[in-house]
Image (cartoon, rainbow, N blue to C red; front, top):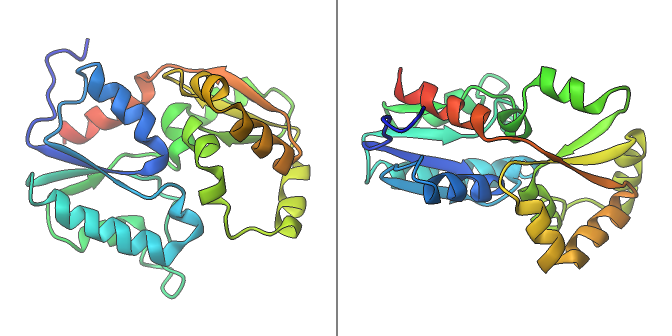
Length: 209
């Protein structure tokens, strides 16, 4: 149903945690953007570095296309010195033609709040994507044991929303990464397969504006 729609004339700038999903969409011929650029994974934990990398990649993207789609959630950035300078204010600074997918986080791009409510049931879940598991040491490298012990025991499990087989591939090829992450969180990690339809539609909304 998406065959006739094209991303020609657009570039993508995304958080590195979603590289697997975007590469899959590119390889499956859904995403034919002029250029796909990434920032480092999980920079929401490092707001100043996120700002620096995102602005740099937006300026790079502008060299390839007049229009740029940003794949970041509204919760991913807030200027610690100016609460009014949120992600949407930030991405307008390099100029016109930049829009952002309408989602709260990368997890929200893969499954809506209602879908996540249905998946979790009565449990309190720490939501993950395959990229979060793959890059967990990078994402959480500023965390000490105390911070982890304060955060994760409030949850019943971690669930990976996987739309392209990335988690199973990680379990097959780098099982130690998954086991170490699970041990560090002291949570069982579960797989829940989803489709990429929601993510596709969020991207398509930006080329139909």
